[in-house]
Image 1 (tube, rainbow, N blue to C red):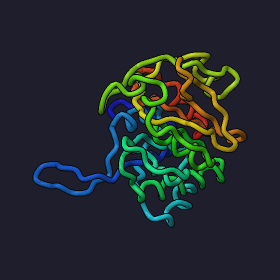
Image 2: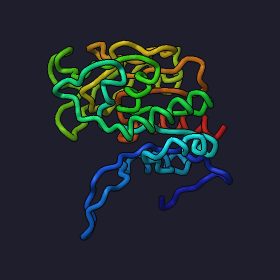
Image 3: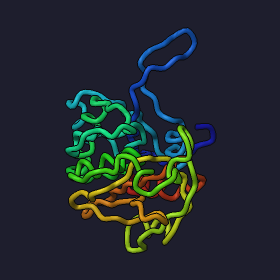
Amino acid sequence: MAGATYDAVPPLIGITANLEPARWGDWVREAALLPVAYQRAIERARAVPVLVPPSVRGTVPILIERLDGLIFSGGVDVDPSLYGEEPHEETAPPQPHRDRFELALMRAAIDADLPFLAIGRGMQALNVVREGSLIQHLPEVVGGHAHLPGPGRLGRHSVQISVASVLGKTLGDHAEVASGHHQAVRRLGKGLSTVAWADDQVIEAIELQGHRFGIGVQWHPEESDDPRLIEALVAEARD
C-alpha cells in the first residue's frame, strides 16, 4: 500500500477467502477471491495481510504457528447440517470445502489463543463451532429486509454494545455499522457472550469468553471509515 509505514516486524494477519470461478482477461479459472477492502483495512492498521483460501487441513497447524492473527471473512451461508438442520429455501448452497477448512482453522485458533475477528459469515461459523445454531432467514423472524437491503448491498444501522465487553471498550456503548446479512445467531454457542444488539434485538456481536481476542460481528468493519476494531485486532496480534 503506497505510503504505508510498518514496525520492524509487523504482524501477519490471515484473511480467509473464497474459491470461486472468476474471469480476468481471456482466462476463466477457479480463483481465490476476497474483497480488497479487507486488505486495505489491515494495511491501514500497519499489518501485513495474508490471503488464506480453503486448503487441506494439514496446513492448519502451520498457519496457526506462523500467523499473528486471523480475520474470518464474510461469504456464503454455513451448511445447516453442521448445526443439525435442513436447509431453508433461502439458504445458499453449501460450500463444504470452505466450511471444513475454516471451522478446523477456527477451532485451532481458539485452542492456540490466537487473536481473531470473525465477520459476517465468520461470526456465524464461530457460533456453529461452539455448538450454536442460526436463524436461516431473518426476514421471516423480524419482518422486512433491514439487515440486507438487497443482493450485494450493505445497509447502515445502529447497534447497542455492552460497555463491559472487549468490543465495548473498543467502540463504546453504540456504533453505526455497515451490515448485509440474512442469517443470524439463534441459539448461542457454548462459551460465547452476546455483546451487541440491533434495535430489533438481533444479535450483532459475540465474544468468546476467556480468549485473549475472539470477537464476532455481523457487520463489516472493513467497509467502514472507523478503523478501531481492525486496529484493536492488529494491536493484540502485535503484542
